[in-house]
Length: 153
Image (cartoon, rainbow, N blue to C red; front, side):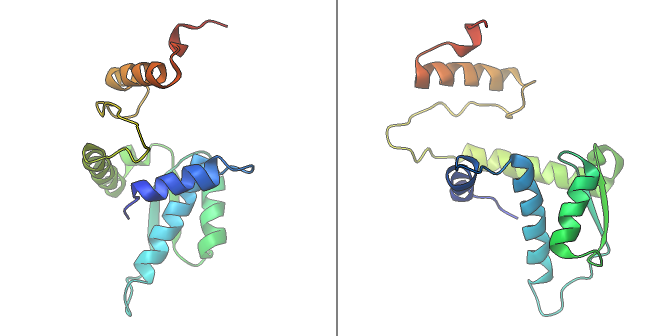
């Protein structure tokens, strides 16, 4: 399932920044539900989904309850675990595909905000990625004209 820039912008503006914002975890639950519904509604003879493996965001039991509520308890067996990508080959493969797809999409990213011309050398997005950390430091200064990382409380 592709998550476009327009969708993310919509989520940020309409959901994450609204008076009752939606969390990234909730976006994750919703994305899994939409992807599964898309698979079963794609053809006249949809595949029978027997087991759904998910590398959890947050509490596995809560995640499972969200999926069962949205899809029904007879939809499939749900295997939802932390670090599932290290335990199950299908999750590992999906994780690699997702990261490659994300990275390819980011290479072609275009800032739509008027007057915003920011460097796209932002790394992986993970806090352990030094390229990412340096990009954030540079951007925060560029946008806010303050070095937030040098402030002490």
